[in-house]
Image (cartoon, rainbow, N blue to C red; front, top):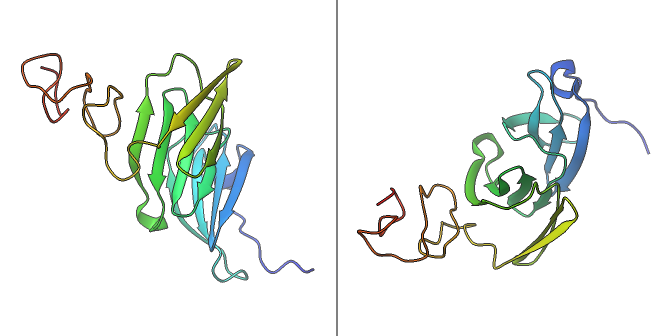
Length: 165
C-alpha cells in the first residue's frame, strides 16, 4: 500500500468530514460547516494519483448513500435524490418531503429506502421521483409545487402539480 496523491483544499474539508461514499470512479464526501466547505463534494478518482474535485452540492448531510449514479441524502425536509452521473452537473431529480421527523440516516436496498431519525423508522417503497416526480401520489417531490393525491384541476393543486389550485 502506498499513498498516491492527496487532495488538500483546506477550505473544502475545514468543517470536518461526516461521511465518505465511493462508487466506481466517484467519491462523495459530506463536509460539515461552517464555511465555504460545507456540502457534498463530488471527486473524480478515475486517475487515483490526481483526484479532481468536480462539484459541490449545497446539501448539509450527516449521512448519505452513493448507489450507482444516484446519491441519496436524508435531511430536515425528508430525502433528496441527486443524479451524479455527470459529477460536474449533478442535479436533484427527486425529493420526498414533509416527514414528521428529521431523517438523519439512510439505507437503500434496490428500489426501497429506509430512513431513521428521532427514534422513528420510515420505509419508502419504490423510491418515487428518481426519474421524474409522480404527480398525483400525495407526496410532494422535486420540482412539484404541490401534490394533493389526484390529477384534477380546480382543487388544492393543479393537474400537473405545478401550482396550488
